[in-house]
Length: 79
Image 1 (cartoon, one colour):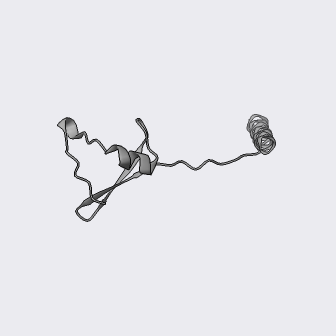
Image 2 (tube, one colour):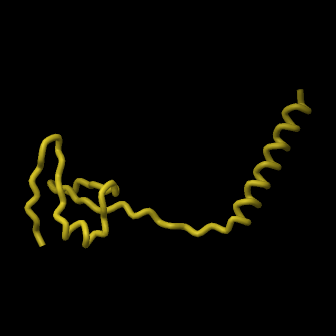
Image 3 (tube, helix red, strand yellow):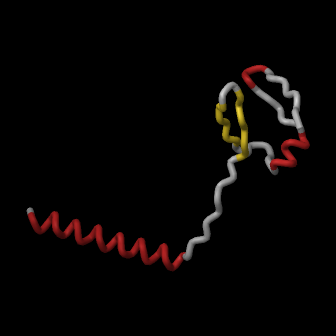
């Protein structure tokens, strides 16, 4: 379907309600714009939700903390 959209002051465009509903976008959502030839293509930014095991994060942080302490010991022992 083709929509006629008017460009307003300061480059503001208003997407028709049915377009927003079909795309699942609301006020303050972010759209990505891409120039393709002489066209502007807009698409909603839909961040991926990643499930992370809190125990794994805790273990990684613990390992990183230990690595940092070892580096500090090396720096201070070499002085």
